[in-house]
Length: 420
Image (cartoon, rainbow, N blue to C red; front, side):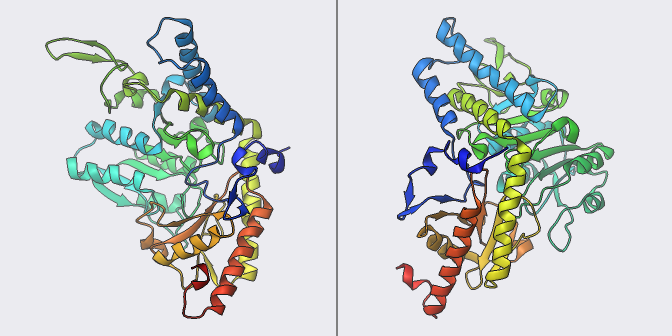
């Protein structure tokens, strides 16, 4: 049985760290999750005991580095249930993964081909496709959404046509938190002989993502979103498709031979995409982070976040009419809201105010810069939750907001002057 209070003890930053004189209430896991001690220890172990390069040395320490580094592919394979560990490409994170995909698939697209995305995508799943539009003349289209900004399989099907060659969607929005029915969307995509690439940055840390069951062609995610180190992520691809991609970086480790007449020969996936010295310690730390959350159980994580999120929403809706919640019915970890009068750029004032209570949230557009077209504001407060958050954290958030609203009413016409 998952015990959040016992789990919290495994995160050193949650034990004794203060912010503005308060115990830290961390609600910015959508940006990056906190790191458990076992991940920190694994990274230190590499630096302390076998800090050598990979795939280059012929001595025992280098052999250990090779084993620890490549073992992580097996861990990722089990985690996302793909067919083969060679379908796992190490990248620097979700953004890098999507850029590797966009560059690699460019030769498979032509002028007029459509890439289908949504208006709630993170910039990392927008700008690479905008660049392909500039470079080769592809067209960008947006899926239809309902009045609550939800993407349903029915609306997705209405958006599909024979001109769509590639579908690129976030499994869970990093702001609105809707979890898409990717399995049905993938089926519709394949009915049109198109390829589907999924941004799993916000889904992989929170729910079980089985790439075989979902039948997705590509998946991108970052380790730091589930408690691993920064600077390491994964691009998964079905092997035949992955091998068709052109390499993004060229250099050491990804070639088999170079000749003076400028001929060169590259390896097959995944190594064709892994030029240069990798983030070895981060990769090994990613493996430990995956094992940590798998031991807790992805279903346990998802149910826990649903429970505490609902508690916060129930209290906000019943006790604070001054708060606008943009995604109350979704189950994803992000909770996006504004205090009336502090929408748009002024949401930063609310974030600063919450920080005085020890509460860490994010404010602004959250890199989803097409989203204002949908929700009508250019900024919001995002409380993004993870497995270490508690009911008490939610109460701290609501009580702090009630106090902020009360103080603001006392200072009519002098916005949050009590902060100064």
